[in-house]
Amino acid sequence: MKALMKILSGGPWESRADAATWLGDSRDLSAIAPLTTALQEDESEKVREKAAVALGKLTHLSAIKPLIGAMQNDESWGVRSQAAIALGLIQDVSAVPALRESLRKDKKEAVQNSAEQALNEMRR
Image 1 (spheres, rainbow, N blue to C red):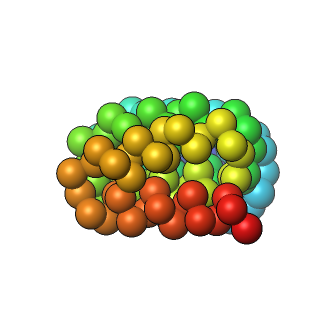
Image 2: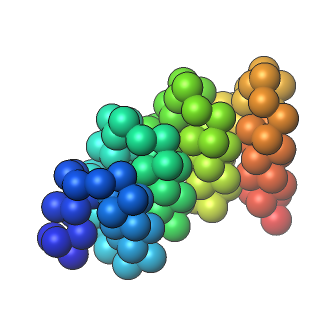
């Protein structure tokens, strides 16, 4: 696990993206902090997307605030979209207002669709 976290913090973007995926698949909650850092700070939008997906797979409430931040503020519509989907996986109602706002206000249809999908997941 530590080796994956080290890769996530340095190296080629492809390796960092793969590390984020593997950390999400691991279900190890010690990965939340490095994945959150990657989501918020990595220069590669692909790495940020994979970090969002991974945080959603971990389904821990501590990921909600950073995922909402990414969904509302990331310059990449791909990251915003993946953050919305991840919030749907976590299924905590505290994310509903932010998801509704993205559904109404985001200029990218893909992000709107992801927010709608997440809201629908929460209704189940």
